[in-house]
Image (cartoon, rainbow, N blue to C red; front, side, top):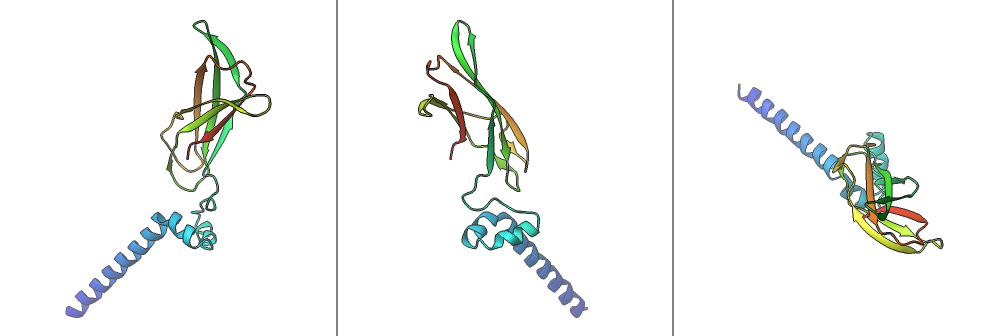
Length: 147
């Protein structure tokens, strides 16, 4: 009887230990990969690959700049989408739009939010933002993730 109880406790302790190790490996992935980059291959083999340290987790796709008029004011409308390129669900950071001149110089900038607050792996969230009274020399747009 004592031997059986001892064996059950040993199995339970081993199960708890393995659960703790698995949780640490899964939830501590970013820190583990930052400290030991070679673990990236192991995570990839497990289907949990994260982008390399410093690589973007998001891809931002932007449609061509739209110009228009609303309530008698000139406006530019920026549409696009943000894609989660990581292997896990992540919060969507604020986005920063910047109007560019013909030489690529930034003329004006503002921050805004995508339509989703959180994205699953590979998921896409659309965004739309407007700027009233844009500078006349603006010919392009860039949208980036605010870090």
